[in-house]
Image (cartoon, rainbow, N blue to C red; front, side, top):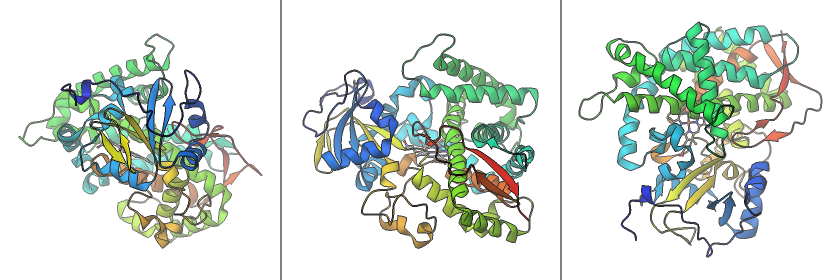
Length: 447
Ligand code: HEM
């Protein structure tokens, strides 16, 4: 073992003892993975087993499939796997945030977020989320066909502007902030770091600078005041020694929220509407639960009376996982499924493939939300893991589910989701699954 710290060491590219192949010259297997990650994983699983090697451009990667390997990578009892190096591609955009920290450093950063995502703190976000969902949906009701993708994204950006910073998305500052959020997120699809005007990566770096300046100006005021937004909680949080977190920590952990929260939740709304459009009986079921509440807005405590909303959310995540793959890099030589993995090797586990893994699920490709009532997902703690697990488990899981339920509540209580007859879209799978055409649909009133 070399004396150089693992964060300073280059990726290991020598995987010759591991079964698999590197696909085409230069691009490797990148195209077939992007075209359909499920088919890619299925093919590898059948040809090579749970552990195989492949190439993403110049990177040589180990695909570690199945719930047991997900458990090893997520729980990481032996401290063998680094998130920082797994996500190294995004260093310049989110390198200072908790998602790219390991072990002690991660624990320190995670503390900064803890109060903002407590149930009691989230109660104060609910009113805004209800109001924003109601307002954005209003012009779409009974207004003919629209594409949900753009509306859902814009709604969630407005929710972010309001609940993350306390700045309403409609005003001048709010509109500028929303645009910066959007530009920042769009940059994450970069392949090469081309930092020239006109390139997404460049726009993303500029947007990060704008957001950072905006946040830094608010920190002192948020620390002194008692605002209930997420940024205010970050600013008031203290470390184990009773000190406030630095401005740098606050900014870095603020911007990672945009990366982690926005398109993941947007995709879950689009894909749920796609499934609901094809399963009117499930719309009926949601509508009945929503109407039984007899309310025009819902809060956190109402979610318990909406079990079908939760099942639909989970079944949508199972079939269309918003985070299809998650990366790590080995720190030490270790073993997965009996195969020796060298130190410094990039690894990926496919959440999306575990969700349809043959032999575990009944009719895995069928939309059947009641499988969550039956507890089919409980056969293994990492068979169904759309929010990850272990130290890096999604801190916004309840926030995402709450936003989903509130949005759906306002959409479905008095309206029916209708898709085009015979609608059968082309799919985008990475970075997030959704119909490429952003789901044309209508909301038609029901009595
Ligand atoms: C459907 C929506 C969402 C899905 C499927 C999702 C999924 C995930 C997954 C799989 C991870 C773990 C990544 C890893 O282990 O490498 C993660 C981490 C994270 N998520 Fe989410 N997420 C969602 C929404 C949100 C929301 C709404 C927020 C915040 C408002 C959020 C904030 C975070 C943060 C900060 C982390 C990093 C946690 C850490 O490293 O300790 N996510 N998410």
